[in-house]
Image (tube, rainbow over all chains, first blue to last red; front, side):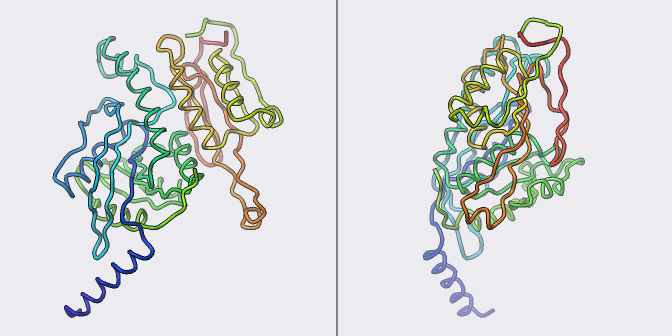
Length: 220
Length: 125
């Protein structure tokens, strides 16, 4: 394709986006604990701004307060989308401080404090649902996808008419099965990725611009 | 945790009973029952928005020594046809089991089957 043809195509894409698309969107990274939400948030930030979002750990509920970064410009060919990325604490229906003691060797005091902060984190995550334009729902591709948390989050977002992009994370693990995730939630786009290694994140970014750039009418 | 009893209480809640309650009353009723160690089987479950509120309310009421949260499992909402949507018929929640997390454990779930396990030795108050 010649230079002028490319230029025309670029201007055409920009014009289409101006008319029909969004320029700015607040995107929440959601999911159960320990699926790699903060690892993904760090990956997105590192790739587009050189910054990082937060610390990661094998112990569940490492992220206990929502953190966000504003104005991250993610590009996809000739189109782009400015995003505020919100990394949310993992949503769970139960939090037992004894799990932190017995499985991860934390002291009783640390465990109780972590559990208390984790319950507050879940509430904060749910509160953020009111204020976002789209969600990257992170699921662990090595785990059963039919958890109530996944089903509840998806149902809630569908009721609000918010766009959902499922990131089937941990694809670098031997027992990962992104096909199971795709068949479990066929109504939404599923992108297999490894937030840890960066595998296929280019495809995720491309889908983010495409899916979150569309204009929608949110239901409150 | 709840004191040890001989049996475990299962309560089947009819669609009618829940339909007669507002969302707020429904969530209060469920949490109150579950906190006493009962396992509820709802003939018609909660909407996703109600489920999210139930999780939020549960987090507010967690007591680290007596109530660690809930286990909740239900099928996805029934799909409605194009015609049903045209006539304003919304998707209906389906059967759901809810219990205290120290007592009820989800084993496996797919589109057609939910397997749960009762943790022995801990019954309703």
